[in-house]
Length: 119
Length: 209
Image (cartoon, rainbow over all chains, first blue to last red; front, top):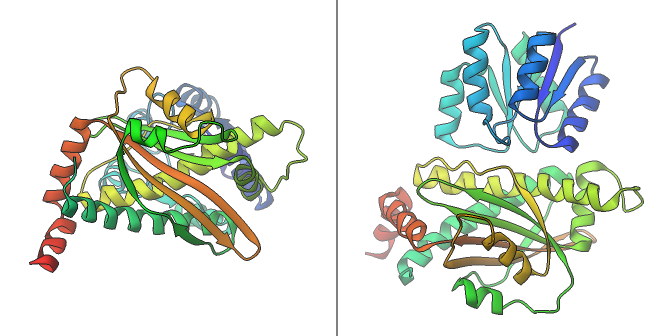
């Protein structure tokens, strides 16, 4: 069973994602609202997948992705964001994100994106 | 200030941005929405503030701040009833939830984040720039009070306001909202420069001449 860490500053979005994924049979290993919480949980739980927002208070999701891939090059990250800008998409890809899912999304789009990344 | 031609190009970009915003709202709420924008206005901050009734009921607004060479505020302002509708779309919960104000604030923050970014994505991709705002904060008050609150944030000194008032309709539901972009002279100058460098400007110029 793949453990998933959710990193998003919106408690509503985190709760929605958790509900959808638990119903789909995934194990949510933790929820983080900023970089400090994300790295603390990542170090402790070593999740198989990180769902990472880009717009976060303090360090951005792109900064977190860069640090995470330096710390653990095998880290699997799916960006989940409302930002759909060519320059940002390109940077996320170059930093090693496995995919990008744009908000708002349907539950089926979320589970399909995760299945694709974990394939 | 913007020339008439620059206003038209920006209006084209803004209209495309509104369409994307509407698409995001339709997906978020799982229903189709039609938007009826009233006149797009470009004013000084003082004119914009004076244009809103001083005694109107409190509204909720997401305030997203962009930094960099085009610093600006994006305000997505909703009256109470529209904020409740948005909360329902996002959480599935109605006004019967116990901590209504807190839930409504969270919902307005997230909806503003999604809608304002749908708008910003169009500007960024059209002008070939990168526009990443800070995470939204929520302001409450009349629209002029909301503008004042945004202005009071340290380091921000906007001179101009681009205002679009929207009426949104879907089957038996109607929502209203105000999209307001506050920016200073330097940001406006940089924005005009980017518009001039963009394919949107070339296309507009070709159409005109």
